[in-house]
Image (cartoon, rainbow, N blue to C red; front, side, top):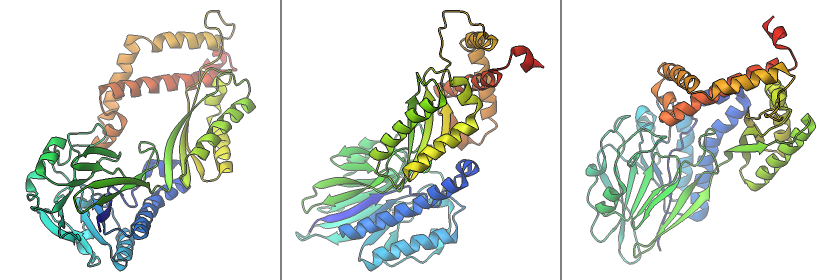
Length: 424
């Protein structure tokens, strides 16, 4: 019989969603419970597939705020695996290192939590006599600026060797560097499979040996889009590895852009958006689809879509609710007014908009708003700066988009009033 296991990481159980909670507490509650639901699905999958083990490559929790209630929920799920005869192997990631809960909670005897010192555990003896060994090293602290690879033992001779490591590898724009190492370093170490964690996007970095970042099993915000899942791994008596991805998301975040060019009235716009949301909902199997909706194109409704943003969000939420299990996280308007830019307009607001466009396209304006954005970013926590602007290009884009959105909002509220009335 082969050795079969489920490889997951970065569950971030009960991760706080402060910004989302401020906008929609009900939706925030749904997403927070989705991380628990993902673990339930993972355990269900392990039992249904009758695997030998579950490997969790770090960041079960989301930091020091972890409650005992969260830990008890985890212990209950691990107990289900224990009762099914399935072993669990866990390494602590950078978020887990902040929490004392795992250290203090008594877990089932089938659960092995690796410490900050390398250890090798015999996982199974195959029918041909070959042994399967799992190697792991946990984060001892919240930061690991140096590679943890030198801490690992050499592979067990004539055995099948699986390494568990929480690492940013050689770096990712969306993640801070943690226990950095290269793919080549991992390949040279001699293990048959590397069960990685930390980067939330799934990627198979190598097939011989297998080096797998499974991604997170449940997204938590719009930057973690799409269906998420885990990897089922089968290793036969000869060390051949077969990978299979399985979805575990109960909620999927997606961005949807709808071109409303030609929509002459509000009803036309609503119909166009309804069709696109319905198509996307039909295509995605998640129990709950959470959308960030962006309206684009040229339409005479551009000014009204911005001015009546509250009505627009209500309309979109109503459309989503009618589809079942569909939510609108945010509505963005990037529409421009319809019209012939080559001819003068009798509307003073339209003329003002043309002048504003000239200013916004100037080098001086872009440099000024970039300077303001840089100053504001310095007043934010480092982790939030990384989310808003990972590099200089992202900073310039953030600043310019804020300027464009702000000017469009002002012009939208001026529409239908003369400039003189607005000044009064």
